Length: 399
View 1 (cartoon, rainbow, N blue to C red):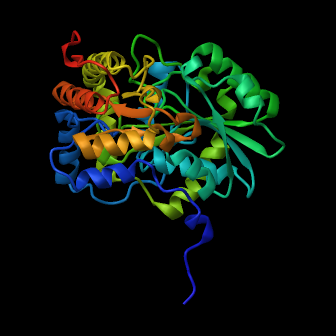
View 2: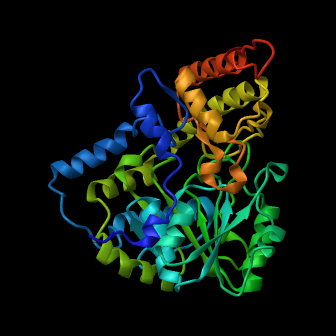
């Protein structure tokens, strides 16, 4: 019998994150800094709103685009934070997480063979979303020398007559990098020069440290050509509720809605009710969690640096991205041996694109106790394998 699986799927690279989760799940006493999920429970008042919705029998479909209440809450959220006006009826679409929104926008704008400039390192699904929509992802590498920020020159080196869009994701997963206004203006000028769509994944918009998040669509002339993707998962500790949203030009939102109608019907009703509560009344919760992440961030960065694993300062999201070049190991060798020898899980940087090679991603969406245990195990691993000459005490770094 012939192989019925499509070659496009067979040729698609599997997630580099899942491999380490699968190994870790078969082991006991694993300390993981690999998962990109808040360790906080969803705040009680948000959960209560969802439960009340269930108890009230609100278990049917909503409008395809999402409830009017949630679309209005998203519109209010954008106005309050960025002074940006989006029509809740025509310029806002509620999706099943940002992952669905990412696929929908790609499928809505790409003809077969169109190219998308994908700034890397980036989330493992970014290039895959382009491929699934029939497009061609073109990697645009960034480097630690510029704190993993993309420049106009980087984009110019990869543009072609087939280029249709640019996909950026700042604050960034996996590096924790943010994009300064100077570099954003370079991207904006490039997009205008070549008449491109900018897809800006801003799911970590609320989790920044010592800087202000700049909404890309708020730059001069960019609202008309920018699709902004965000959601509830990271900032509000609502990963399992599966609520994302897209805001942008009416024509693209209408095309996305058409696909969404056939693929999904509507995002989870209970999650939408909870999301309204979060957007309208969750500001204090976001700030409390952000402060905890900030404290953990400083401990983990200092710990890596004290062990000779050079780590630039991440200013957003909840990830660190230390270099393991000093060990002489590849990032995959480092991660596999660390997991098997010390039962500590981090993710190889190469899983997030070519320019992530030689780095590892470690998340601080984990308790301080867990982070300190992880640093102790990492130190043992480094000493045992002769990767550092003397014992250090990263857990003693000032909290």
